[in-house]
Length: 114
Length: 382
Image (cartoon, rainbow over all chains, first blue to last red; front, top):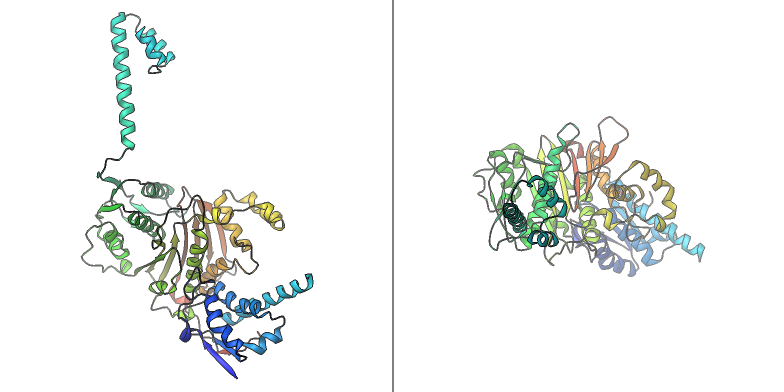
């Protein structure tokens, strides 16, 4: 089963900053309110990024980098089996993937140092 | 004896007395004493007048004369004293401690968007502090229309222009929000209806700037201004003129220097790069801006942070041409992309005074920002 989360329809057309304490419609809020519950139900989640005014880097990092940190994923396969990104803006997809990869690298480094 | 007593009381300095004695030696003793006393009296009166000039009489209005040209950094081919005059005027507005301020706008002839925004922000701040604002309208019809359209006329309680119909004033838009929490929907006022918001990166730059303002600009710091909980903390202006969209976001926070103080001992890996930077760049404000841009520094020191300024540059990169500027306290940074040129140019300079806040400014031709539609893509693997 796959669940699709439409950011514009289910969250906001004007996504905010990184944290709840500094912004309405923050990346942290999206991750905690919509993305994590959907993932914890065991379904693969497709995040539809289209239809919004734009995304700040901090929003995308907190959603996609943050989900890797929260779910403690350690490989790309794990990520791909749980989450997919849908958009007609290639730059958003590349950016989201960049944050996922960066976080995977950091978790790998932490694992090695431990 | 009386004169000696006066010397002891430091009303008359000994050297001054000797000079007097030399010049007046042909006068009688009584005449000398009379002249000395008169001199002391005049000096005391002058001192009293000077000290009274700084005291505000309760209920009295203080009037400031606004300069003719509102600009924070004059272009290289323009008179630099215009920026100096405006910054000095802005400092007088900022440091005003009275109850009622009257600003004479009669001479105002030209307003640059970022300077006008700073002025409005300072007026909003004074108004929130309980200062009663009033003003005299601009004599030029065009300036009066701009003041009306930007909301400055309303703040100063000056008569609004009967009609705002000039092409260059009609397309001024403004927005603002509280300093405690970013309200992204407030930025919708600055998204041009002609510009497809889903194909523009302007919103990205603006939301990052506002988030930065709220998270960093109003951080606890001795230099932070006193703000009430629901007081506005960021302001935005936008102007469409000759097909060029100019947008700016400003805050009255502590600036890059205080929010991100550059401490080499805490960043030893950056030492060499920063030392190279130091030799070319003067001024702590400029150095802090450059350090934040070049190295994606963040006050949190978290590896995933410090990406906001990258978004701000991307607005111009996506447009293909245009300008991006940051002014923070006394520092100024610009990033310029010209059509047909592969590399962007950037530079810094010191402002002729502090703006006591931070401004982000973007300017790009509107048509170039509308990107062609990209094919819909699905999947996580790039």
